Image 1 (cartoon, helix red, strand yellow):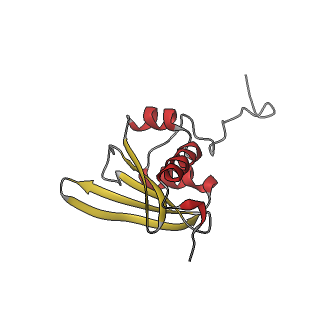
Image 2 (cartoon, helix red, strand yellow):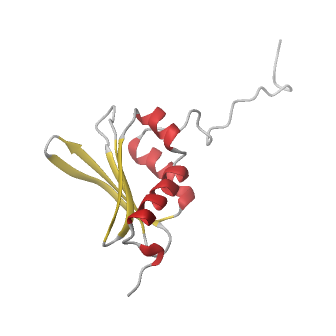
Image 3 (tube, one colour):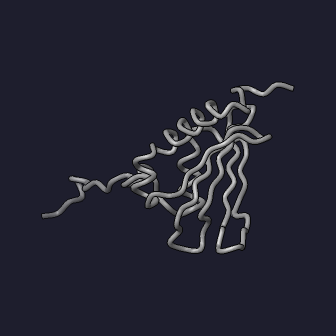
Length: 131
């Protein structure tokens, strides 16, 4: 059974990891927001992947592995790694590209960009304003 994207080719794994980084906001933003995390890419039996190990200011996950699935969606695994202890912190399958960043932010509690696009700025209603 043949999988898409030449999944065993290291050049493909590198290109796919670059796409994943862009879908998360770009390497510049990730470095700025996560404090230059350790990132690695590769290709395993399940497909090409990107891993990011970052410092978490709280007890949440500090490691994520994002794997491109044969369906062109992503499988995302979060872990808590403390010393020699590794604890699963959530596995998500069939994640679309546009869901990667919100999923990461929701599970880790860390933002990958400044400002929260889901939060609308408060507006002063001129009809209710009293001066």
